[in-house]
Amino acid sequence: MTRQYQQGHDHHVGSIPNLLRTPDERIEERLVKLAGELERAVEQEDYERAARIKKEMIQLKGQGEA
Image 1 (cartoon, rainbow, N blue to C red):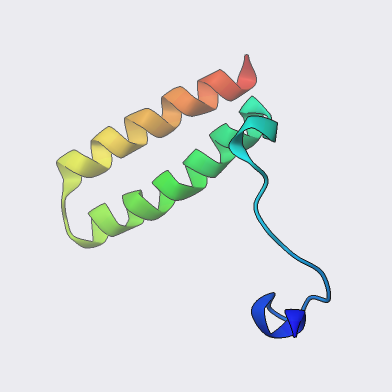
Image 2 (tube, one colour; image 1 turned 135 degrees about the vertical axis):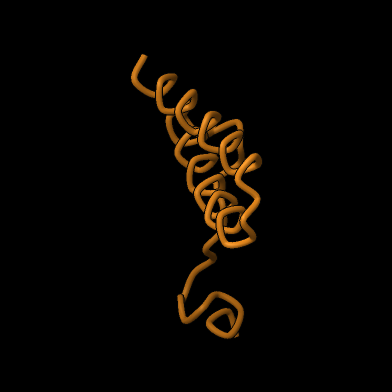
């Protein structure tokens, strides 16, 4: 029965609680989300929003290197 709800896995597959994620993992997750938002902003020709998203991505990438 678990297989039906866990995309074919025999065991529970869930997300890691935010408190257990490393700062780099949280940054990477945010960057992935922002990349999707950036793509949508460009598709919608909302270049001001795209520029803000890109700026945030650059800032986050700088934090990951520290």
